[in-house]
Amino acid sequence: QVQLVESGGGLVQAGGSLRLSCAASGSIFRVNAMGWYRQAPGKQRELVAVIRSGGTSGDITNYANSVKGRFTISRDNAKNTVYLEMNSLKPEDTAVYFCHAFVPIPPMNYWGQGTQVTVSS
Image (cartoon, rainbow, N blue to C red):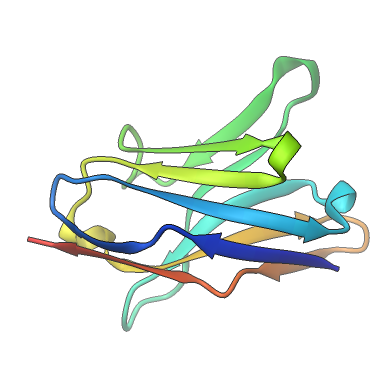
């Protein structure tokens, strides 16, 4: 089992910044990748950013086109925490943001409870 707890959401004006944190606990050694998803009202949950180990090459990150250049995903292995730094926020970034962890063997997806991000225009 992997437990995920998000924090850092809130209300911010357009153009502002927020940093989300996701603290992981449990069988973290089994986790292959972690990421952030978001779900706006009436819309499907979508991938925002993902991070995984690239071995000697360091971490590999991927972003949704809509957040490239504005959002940065990172992690602190010593703290078992993944971060999402969000800059130049837009009203369309308003959503509940969920932390996600993927365990490959056996395939399992774990989710946090979500944190609300609201960007006012």
